[in-house]
Image 1 (tube, rainbow, N blue to C red):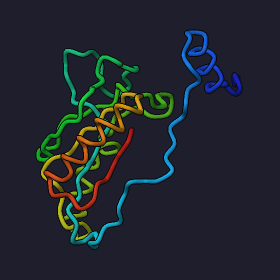
Image 2: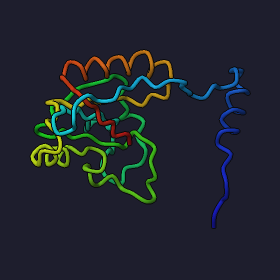
Image 3: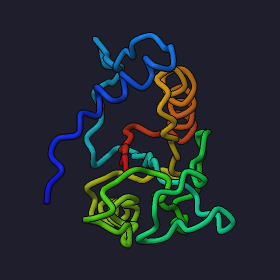
Image 4: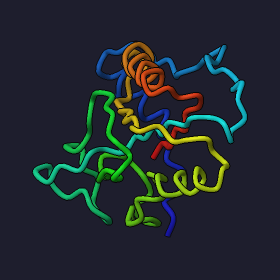
Length: 167
């Protein structure tokens, strides 16, 4: 039996209003600070950006079928080598656990597919490191800290293009 529509936005507004917060201003951007590539993909160096977290065994269940695990969240941009592929997990993120299990890391960390694309000549090269981008639900943190740190990492890695794989 379906419970029907859940008025999430109105419930969120009411909740924070009752706590005395001003009305929430949803994220919006009149301009997008992206630039078209001046290189063909076959000549470009691509960096992978992921919202998946580094597995830490002391932080509870983070494997396939794991319930939401806020303890596994991370709060700073990080870099990790792509070879060998790191053990990243997504238990700290809200996703439809009724219809997927997170059992296949290739679904949220496509290092193998990107490597095959490099081998086939479709992509010039893959950056040596991937970038981990936190999902902290703060526009200010994302815009003023995480985006800045991610851009710095992209430049340090010599990336021409970035592939963001949000989960």
